[in-house]
Length: 454
Image 1 (cartoon, rainbow, N blue to C red):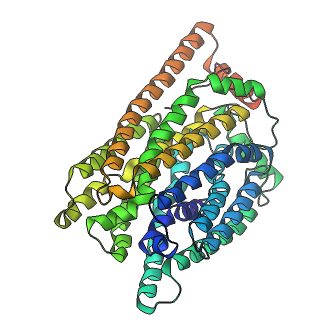
Image 2 (image 1 turned 90 degrees about the horizontal axis):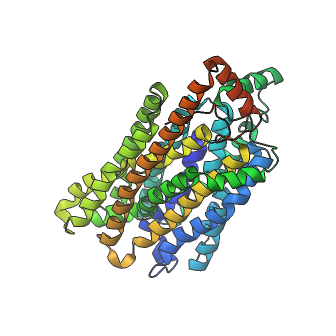
Image 3 (image 1 turned 90 degrees about the vertical axis):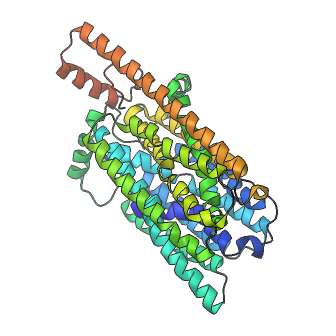
């Protein structure tokens, strides 16, 4: 999962690096056409979200994910042959449609294998590939760029697409053989599968997520649940700065005064720090319960300060390392988004309801990234002041949203604890009944013995 997620993130964000090596000039991009390559990606991602989530619930997780991965690998290879904006738009549309399964699919996989207290650490481990694999990819792309600069031949951005697409196809074949829920994997015997299923009964959220009938009552409940709107809004507000950073990060480094090859190297410390941060937070949230949402809120503050400060500094070459330091402060940006994703398997019970809230969350993710790629406009280069201010405002609003979201969970838990005390039922009996209701696909709102993880 770590390798697959890392490849997907690199595939998705490689456009920024390819822009350094001439994709805009070679394909004749003008005006906002470069930004639209990111926007169309997330429009297609959004359109594919609900049907792919439905398919993930109804069919085998591992096979669905690996087939989608193989298809986007073919698309990424095809980008190497693009000659104009139309070619790129078609290919980025297909890429967005096929990549939409990876994050929700992996979150579902985590929910079928691990207990609630393990969700954040296991999810953050594979999500750390966003940075960890990024370091490997940056070094490889630096080598590709250096070779193209010295010896010429095929354009570096085309070679990057060939490398990333081929890596994706290899990963898809490995996934087909190994990845899936305990019920479907081929490398476990029946006794081992029963043990894996029994391990997560205490989650009170059921066992497996595949082959389940669609429950319209759970759809109605999901639409009435405030958590759907908290999760969607948080994903949107987090993704606006994320969309700008992933699309314009390399170009912003370039605007600070670094060369195109230096950009790949000066971005590595940020990726390394991100990897370290993810591992520390994963370990901390595993050892200390109910701290996820505190970390989510705190993660909004450094990027808020960094981006706002960047918008206030003049465009001057002697400030490039100061700007690099402020941009370095954006490292925790995605932490609040990724930790929020881990709350879905932990705090949502009912398989159809989980699918609806997951889809809505990734809807917010897509729309936020679309907006983020558009508020950073070519005409605002090199400082991109409107974009950096807009991203800062979103981070401030996200901080307030997370605080309100945690307050809602605390209120729900206290109300249930009070009702439990008044009922006179023993803690052991409540635990047993909660597990039984979870196995019957009862939702978190209808299961009075369910407690929300904070």
